[in-house]
Length: 200
Length: 205
Image (cartoon, rainbow over all chains, first blue to last red; front, side, top):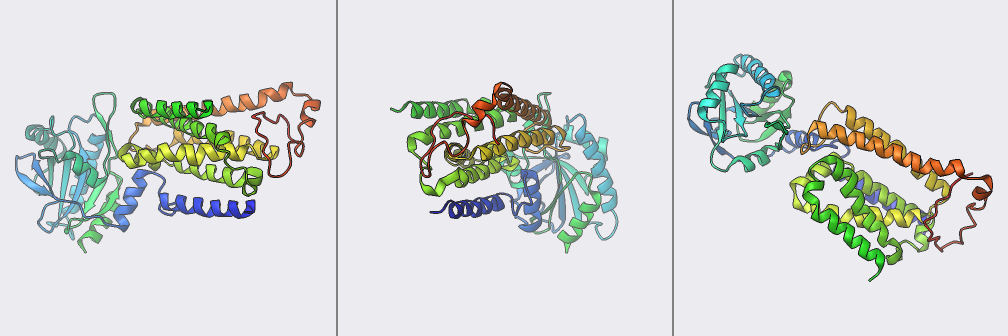
């Protein structure tokens, strides 16, 4: 075989592999890839049993024809989650208006269920203004946490200071239980647009 | 058993046995474990007599294959995947020796001195770009690693860039014109044969 032919074959094969591995050079990181997948594939997320800050047990996403915005937190989080809580409060205020009123639920989900008891979650909820009906704080029941994190594509790692680091984001779930968008925590406008799309 | 095979097996065993500690931070994952696996493949190239046919004249097909392999394993999502999925981990242990180290050695051995020089220059500049990227990226590039460790990896890339630049330029300070011209391309064997020596060409004209 001529070296040029062999080189061209390698170029084609290598290019195809890289194209495949990066979703057409659109996603070089896991975070980008999962956000892209939410927009294009809209994967169904299984319903997981959770316990809320009032001790109520419900399924996440809830089976009540509402869209859901899920963020992941742990209540001992010193800095970033406090900012995230403020963003969620902003989002809650926006969702009180049409066309969202009564059609969207916000859930701050703890990935630290052993420390985040209902009492602890209620404290966090009070601090940030989570009212309950629209915005609640919850933790997964039983051993559902790993499967839940996997389903949403969230990776939690210890941060060497006793806390955690994770790929924080707003996860928009449509009324029929599909993950339709993943957005930056402060992208409130984007969340509104994604919710309009999810509720259509 | 061939000494090269023993070394290669030993390197893969080290990469596997110390897997957990090597993969605990990106610095040792990217700059120790991955190169060790590639080196294991590179060591087997002469033993396997790989890449000696005419198809590999100039080393281009092999160097391109190695380039794609390196690009693939520099994707942050590939690194994340190896930590989340054992199938990706197995793929890493197979492809780095066979699709990066082996073709890199088989390609480099037959590359023109000019090609080699370009590869070296590219390596240093690419490492410098990676260093900038990993020290300045405003977000985490791997979901499985902390931002502070990402920064340290960037410093590691920078250190490696300086080390390689020093290692490759220092001999030039002591090279004479005589030595350089004695190793002109074309003197190193005819078509289809391979210059097996690991000697570096000091000066390219």
